[in-house]
Image 1 (cartoon, one colour):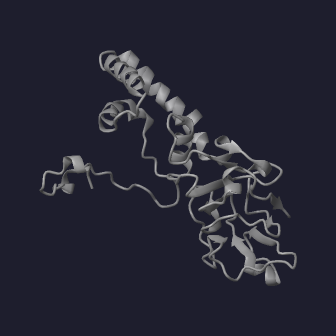
Image 2 (cartoon, rainbow, N blue to C red):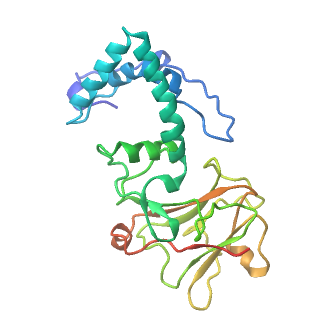
Image 3 (spheres, rainbow, N blue to C red):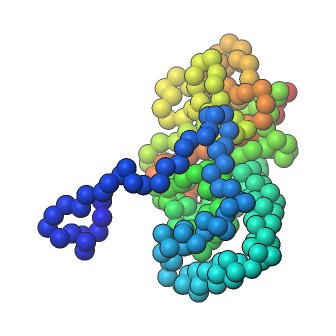
Amino acid sequence: MYPLSRFTGHAEIKDWAKIPNFPNTSTGEEETKWVQPESFFDELGAILKEVPPLPGEESLYANMQSVLDAASKDSKLHAALVASAIDADENLITPLFQFHNSGLPLPHNWTTINNGAAFGTDYYSRAAVAKSNIFVNSARETKYFYQDSDGTGQQLNGTHAYTVSFAGGQLPPVKGFWSLTLFNQHHFFSPNEIKRYSVGTKNKTLVTAPDGSLTIYVQATPPANDDRANWLPAPKENFVLYIRAYWPEESVLNGIWTPPVVTRVK
């Protein structure tokens, strides 16, 4: 796919064999560390040429390029850049993997973002999403809510059991569908005996209470009796929860509706 302005009447041909090859070193169990801080500034110049500046970013690009040019002629300056990249990776970027370190705070320790897919110059939120979440849609397409703590602020962990109770008439208000998904400490699905990784609109066997409320049981072992129908299996270690509201109603977009508390029950 390419712009119509480049069309000459003949289809462009792309030789995909000549694109850079990035071998997959992931074990599938945790984050793949694609960005190496030790070589970040060595590769930044090529990135600046590959990705054009947004309107208003021209001076920022020029400043960065001037620093790269200076570092190419001064080994001490280059060493200082490498040290700064290592420090930033450890003390700024790595903490952004935890949802509570970014986004807008909501009741009960949930967080969210309002500018998904439209970050503009909000580089902090863009970096946080890239680190913890990889990709998001615009808010009017999908509204996201992130959670790594219970109602008391303690990290979610499978040695405990939790409930997430939506009051009657208080399921996520959407025109599309919604889901409550559980990810392990590396933000991947957690294997479990019933192969259930989320609950929501797609689940037709969820059991509601007589008052219309819906309680989801988030725990490592199956709940008793009829509660098993509402079980969202958790691993034995730390985990996170994640609500997606697709095609959200206005009450989601304007903050009138927010997710319920995650309650630790034992």
